[in-house]
Amino acid sequence: MKAGHLSEYFTGVAAKNLSAVEADFARSNQHEFNGVGPLKKILGTQENKFPAKFIYLTDNDDQPVVAEGLLTWYDSRKNKRDKRSAEYRLYFSTTSVSECAAQSDLLVIGRRPDGSLLVIIAESNSTIASQVQWLFGLSDLSHPGFSVRAELETDQDRIEFTSQFILENIGIVVETTEESHLDVMLREFDGNFPSTRIFSEFARSTLKGINANDDPDAVIMAWMEREEILFRTLERHLIGDHLKNGFKGDVDGFIGYSLSVQNRRKSRVGRAFENHLEKVLVDCGVKYSRNGLTENKNRVDFIFPGEREYQDKAFNSVQLTMLGVKSTCKDRWRQVLSEADRISEKHLLTLEAAISIAQTNEMKAKHLQLVLPRSLYTTYNLTQQTWLMDVKSFINLVIERQGNKKNIS
Image (cartoon, rainbow, N blue to C red; front, side):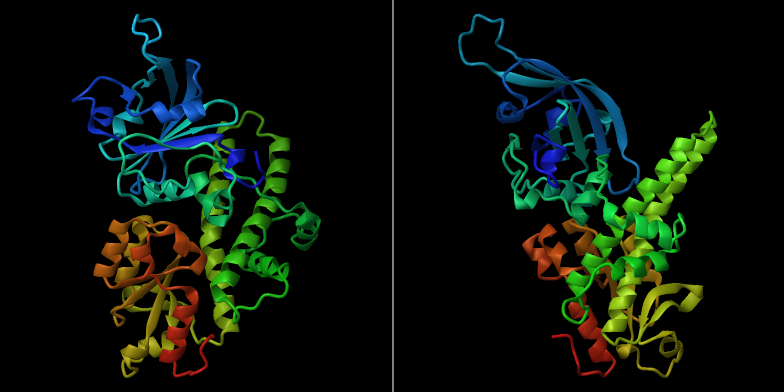
């Protein structure tokens, strides 16, 4: 295995789209996946029963359906007089996950370093299916059988900020830490978690020699990646201390603490994203209001040139711009549509990779322009990429509307 790559977590992966007989038990009771010949590259040629974790993913639920079970890999001709070459089959038992499956859903089978299997089924045409397919570098699933990757150590397989979040969505925890900064953080923050704004400032201070005016897309990703690593480093230390003290049989206390850890992770990322964007805007000389008030007491993440201009009915609405900021979208992007009635064309900045074509088509129809750092473009298909807007282009748009001719080059 190669550190920092998918090979740390998988020795091989295979994927296909489910056929009707594989997914619809009303039509078939075979309980076997078809076209399994290529799986010999990752499962071998010895019959085996693999312990497996099954996961069903959909954009509609934050929590996946999870089940434990077995996958049986066997040669159906082993004990027959037929002397033709072996014919392998992969049998699965019924689980709560298999009962969720439908025709055309994405199926991914990954073999873990301990020999177990992770079976992922993702709803067809969903964003999470696009993300899983991108994560494992599985570009063409148009043929009926499995596509297999037995080596996961290319540059494409390097685990970075985006792939880390997708891995965690499928239950793989990636612990990236920067221990050289731990002592400094413990002194700086007195052994506690500081406010998100303070932590964002600290994270930026550890990266020298980068300027938002040079490349705002790269800078905002660099700041996000650094903050994530530093936060996980501090979190791992503080949680470790808490766990050492134990909960003394207090189950409710343990569950409550676990939930608080998860909620802090989720809320912090969104606020950190806003913090770093705000710094980019300041460095680029952009006028703005953060959390500006609009109609019906709605607050917009960012209004340009500001809340005062938005509230002034005499101010030309053509010169107004709004930007929602969401680290992840799912269906929450629709919330932006009801904000800032004076602005017909909405903008939404996100870190969400590989949003489905169905979702981006709906965004277009609703006059919502998706903005994301340029490095994430490759997670989208070529048609989507021509429509996307990067951070630099958005800032230049705002600068032009504000009458400032000094764009970012």
